[in-house]
View 1: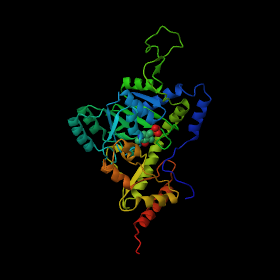
View 2 (view 1 turned 120 degrees about the vertical axis):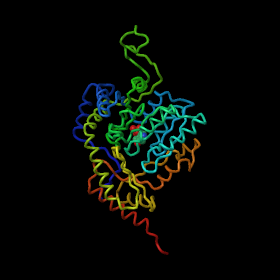
View 3 (view 1 turned 135 degrees about the horizontal axis):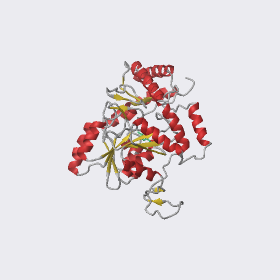
View 4 (view 1 turned 30 degrees about the horizontal axis):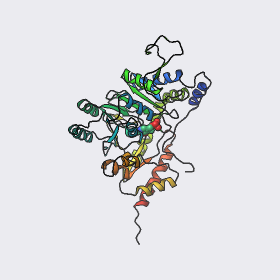
Length: 392
Ligand SMILES: *Cc1c(COP(=O)(O)O)cnc(C)c1O
């Protein structure tokens, strides 16, 4: 291929561009009507009562933890196979992080491991305040099972659904929060839909939605009904909480509204390309992503594991051929920062074993069938080469 096939990429239409340009010509570039309108579109799409749009999903996770009261002395548990920010937000709140190992088929947080860890944590009096399951690659975690454990052990749930807008579980969209307190989506350009940078929180809890909206903008309110002192003039505002500036702009939300109108098309295309890989790779010595009954994946990522070839060699060979393979993810607990905090090799063996052989193949709506076929044939050659043992 003469051009580089990236593993993920945005799809921007003329309509998307027109919506952004229209907003650029309007009175409000930020804190205007597009933010509210985007939030309305998101909550209608996922069927949640509330949506609060913010500057990115990391901000959304951070504010969600703060709104749930996560602070010093608290524990937050997440999956080791995720982007670092799912875990970092706990430290940013002054809390402590721990991980629950993944399931070797879904690569999501393993529910049996979660239960075992909860049983031990109860004995040790170290139960988590919040658990953050991550819907890896766009496949929902088993939320009903995690919810049942939350009722038994008394923790809150934030779904890190950064990969999973459009995915379904139990017949409903991820983000409806039937089995969680909060869901978080990311709109980074590699994700399913984009706002450039951006994120959103969905919830059915008004108090959480209000707190997150307040914290997003310095903890400052101008809402007449919320003011403690309502005798001042029209200039008056009050700070009630210690917040941040995690606002998203109207320019970004205009793009988000337009992108959300195209989401079905994106999801169908991703599904088709994933099916093409599944079919073409079925006789390769690789482990394919699982497809589960009752789950509809948004196919953010197409991750395989090589079964008996050298990952480094296959990866380098594919990159040489202009194929933007990637690895999702380096287990978070192996990052130097986390080792500093006391984590070690061997702590989460399933995650570590997965990582050793994992490769993410390119998948996004701009990829053609021919490109998939090219990637498949290069992968075949790369696997054959890496299995070749020269006789000396
Ligand atoms: C992308 C991503 C994030 C962070 O999203 P940003 O919008 O870039 O802050 C968090 N968690 C997961 C699982 C992600 O993939």
